[in-house]
Image 1: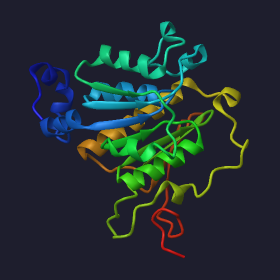
Image 2: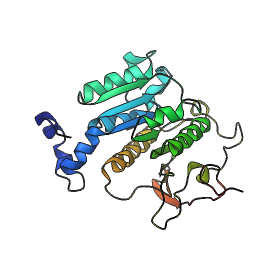
Image 3: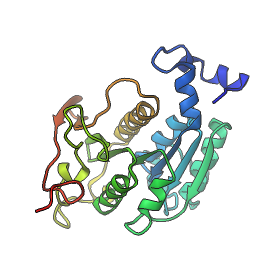
Length: 258
């Protein structure tokens, strides 16, 4: 996809990267990426996807901006309090990069609408804050045959992985699903919400930026994605560790029949 003179100047630092260059930037411009959640993870993720020149960014969120969001949800500002997050995020993207189209979806993603939403995009990035949505998104991406970048935040820790569960690995075995990594959600009440437990604001920026890097990698193809690897970040010790996980033949999506 051809770039305008303005885009050539805007993306100049990408264009001189051998691993991205003109072809990679063209793929970014042609790409459609769905972001689930415009909160702590989604805010920096959307900003960096827009800055990178993703052609169309879909944003799924049914919430409005509140004052307590602004400690970490940096795409929104004080004047946006009370506005739908999809509107506030859309306006921020327009200010950042007019070449990017935003497709707002002011709704809650669930098992009923997830497959249709995922199928309309090339890559899905899940920054939701609850297991029900994470399972719905990951199942939908498997059925829609779409790559998924998914992350989660704790108080001082975060995790990130990329799922391409509809594909096979280099050894010919299926790539793992989200349910291979987390077969079942934790017991109700065992994971307190952010409002009760708290979260370090800057950590959301770190994890959202790492999500953006994985999405850009998925579109352009540079480097090695986090498929079968869970990146864990400990902000207290500033430690990054990687856990390897594999396909579980008992998982309900791609497992072998009993």
